[in-house]
Image (cartoon, rainbow, N blue to C red):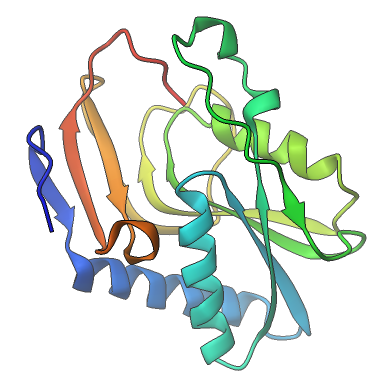
Length: 188
């Protein structure tokens, strides 16, 4: 495990991430206990391993869970300001959205612009009965009126700091940390 050179401080270690995921799975399970199946949809990039891990925890509780991935690249409102356009991954939803209970998953919510783009992309696939948001980190600084329904931790940071998340699935370890964030970078 290598530590990023610009890491300021750790917010969650692997045990903390596990506790947050377990708590969130319990909240989702309790909220939707009468629902025979739910769908978790991860937002590319880090929302995908977050959703996959949360889905595994729900399945371990005996829940039937559909899993999907969405790519919001074409729905971003900041593409023209980006020096490098993100790679288009494509969305994968192998289940019917009509009348489904869908929980959109992303690792961090900040301005809510990513959440808005994710909701737009999701609704192009159908009309779910209900859409909720799950995030590992709820960072203050909303620009749009979207709030997560399930949250691991809440943080209030200055604009020159960024929350970064690592997942075992893809990175080799679980961790949430804060690092410097130059003001001229696009915010999501």
